[in-house]
View 1 (tube, rainbow, N blue to C red):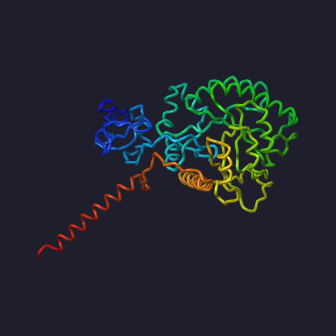
View 2: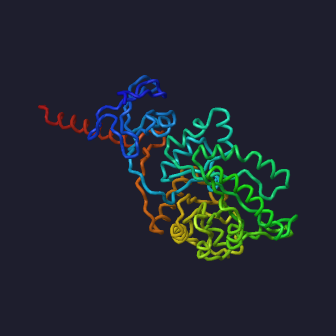
View 3: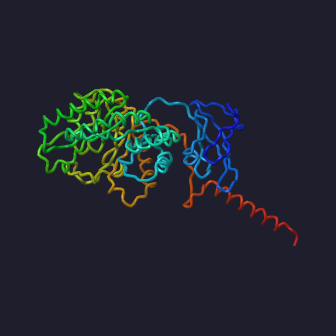
Length: 413
């Protein structure tokens, strides 16, 4: 390995000098190495950072701008590989959030999430313009798993619209596979004016088989979600699948690449038992969603605005749902969901922090192992300055002042 690694961010050099207990460039269990990096800040001052660099042996722009943002000193540790397991996933659909990708990724890292959903349409545009590696660079640098994407296919559309969506799907699945995102989700229409239950069921089965063949070619699986609230069926002639039991029935006759979303809120709204999860064919859980509900509102009267942040009231416990999914061998994303209206007045950072804390609480309730985080965020004040450095500076000033006062007191009059 060369003694220096070119840093494309500030035009300086990243080096691997001696690190206590490690030789320069020593390889770590995951194939990367622990190093110190020296870069130039905007004023031309040399700054040193310590961190873990992956096997690519470069510091990418998002690594410097995100993980080592502001030339801070985050504690980054190389960890051994862990077996596949359910992981905490952040979705900007499940928790309606806006912001630049780099900002959202930093929040996910800071508050304990292991994965994030991707916007497949945006990824497709970026890949077409700049290449797939550019499109996925932020997720790779942050070492976040790609949770899932929302399938851009309208299952209940007319034939022409469905055919158009299917025509575009292979290219989008290729982008998703290149981003290592192998899970997609979509929501079934709860009712129809045009189709009877029997005809709509057959239409879904046929279309899901078509989609399933395309998914199989790219190693992807699709999870189906439902809308259980009565308001979603109002004004429509023919009710369709809006219970988990009905969803299980569709999954059992659908393509093997079609599975289900296990949603704590929908199970509560329909009054169904978690035992239904065991009726799914093995390996057919694609995502777990966690939410809560208001106290005092009957389950049958719930509407979408009653979907609260998980752990908000304790009406819908998280532990049993996570435990049931784990018992079924699920190794995918568990995602907090809440309606936008329930998050009003909370800032983006507060929302993600609270969601991360609640997900960790759910993990503890389910008795699931909480793996150590490879990234520890730098605590900053309201001006973005590292608090630890400010406290150290204040301590030095206080010590110097105390020493000066002691010297003045000891000096002869």
